[in-house]
Image (cartoon, rainbow, N blue to C red; front, top):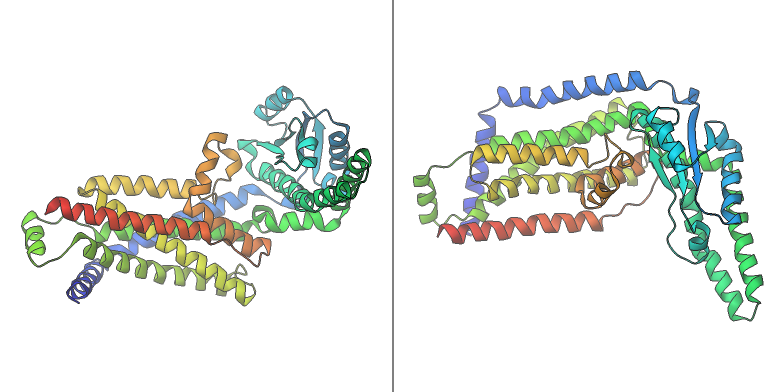
Length: 408
């Protein structure tokens, strides 16, 4: 129980350290709020009214299959989409020129062998090249295309299973291929002609469904990252070597000190997150959700705090110099914000950077919170977040033990 007493002693000391900063710390916590609210307000003012948009979009069909051409024509003629998008057939080169001159917001590219991959059970992706100068419009296009391909992929397994079963019972191969083609086209036309298709897309496209709420929620996540950085900097100071030696004689380990700082940092962030969520609940309609979904949002925010708290503590363990810690924490905070997808959608990043989003704990959290709040989801994927947290805290334990051995 000696280690527990050490932890409680450090926790008490860290709380006193924060309380001694009661004059400057609140100002530092409020300052980013004012700054981000002003930025969000200006962004909302410049975005304008979504319902009045007439978005110019390019479309490039690299698949020579007749079936893909049929899908492309159905996409261009669908009334739900044609009401908000004006689609132009273009080559890749023409689309690049049109994007650079801001004539189109995005270019939709159907790759080679698109339909063959679909009917063969392989992964087939429709690429959307966005225009960085027309961020909202190209994000809308991306979400619409994502909705269409999601519906088709959902049907893919069932349709191929029917075709496989038909082949097993002795149906002619040509008849099986024709049946699969008819099923794909029938399902595609059904999806494209459904008035619910675009509505579902707009629910999942948070930037278009409720622009104000989207930016407010994005600001909250950015604030949580900034606040965690500020508090972690306040909690960490350089310890004199004589004090370190005395702590070592009393049996205090690096891991013990790390656990106490994690506890204080997470507790402080939970208080700030609770205040933020209560503000969203009482002053906006963002959390006007079913009780189960409110619990899901709270769970995701709590896991997010645990993750970023662990990241800051790990940096504190790896770097002894306070100035170095400050620089690394600021860089890490910027990366967490950039790769969260809250302020800058993935579509505007180079393709080689897109895998970074898959491993970004901030993106995992923001994505599922946005899906629950604006997309009407009643589920969430916690395994990747849990794995990320496990890796972070595993590294904390290993780094603390290694540092303790090195100092011994």
